Amino acid sequence: MTEIDPATQTELEAAVFRRLVSHLRHRTDVQNIDLMNLAGFCRNCLSNWLKDAADERGLDLSKDQSREHVYGMPYEEWKRQHQTEATPEQQTRFSGAQTGGH
Image: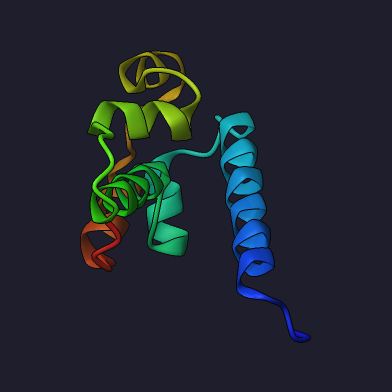
């Protein structure tokens, strides 16, 4: 990447995060277990990382608030509307491929 000042880099990274979150909000067909199995992170990881960043800065952000930011709705509502039961194959792959994303 060409020479970019730190503020612009932060703005670009923030834009990418917002686009990723927006993409995942629209792709409700993609289950968290699939994300974990393929990429080693999921929506919950993103919300945990958001909370960690807030905590590091002394900001008051609850786990529920960070999840709602990522999911675009309360987590329990998202699960009711979109989460399906994991298949045995998904569970087996998940158990064998833990990467510490959460």
